[in-house]
Length: 185
Image 1 (tube, rainbow, N blue to C red):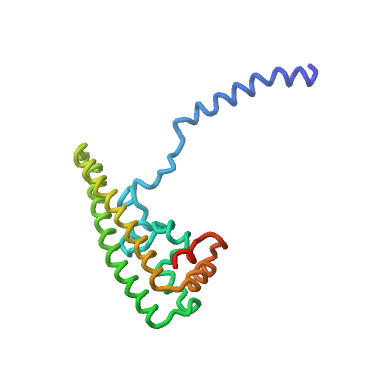
Image 2: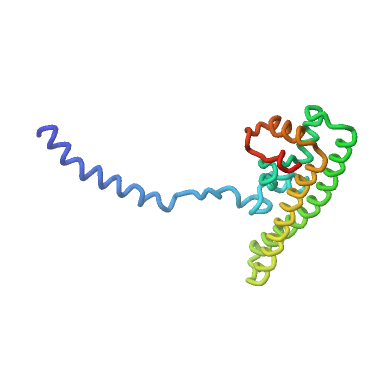
């Protein structure tokens, strides 16, 4: 048999094998969630839980941060480069401590409600009413948490000079034109 004819005869076999392979594997496709079923709170990673407990921002204030509104934690990290005065440093430390106290309390509420939601599902005791109540509470708390982080970024604009805000953006690696700090003062 000539090689060309042998190839033509092999094509239907190759096509059939290719089409049947996905059908055989459909039941064995692992979920991207595989392994998460052993987490203490299914909806939150260990890092997310630690961040909520510590009052960390978790990217919740990116709308402020990336538009030229520095956050207190990062301002303190850059205190020497920003040449903060004693008064500015003290005010920033005060804002950071107040923010942490507020956001840790909200984070604890989120964790408690997430724990309740997880437990009710695990125990097969969830009802439409408790589902609605808990998810509404979690959503509201998440909104309050984000607003708190954003509010403290806004407060920093009363502490820093426009030059310090611009230096902050440059120190954090943000490109020129990515914020409007000068327009805010």
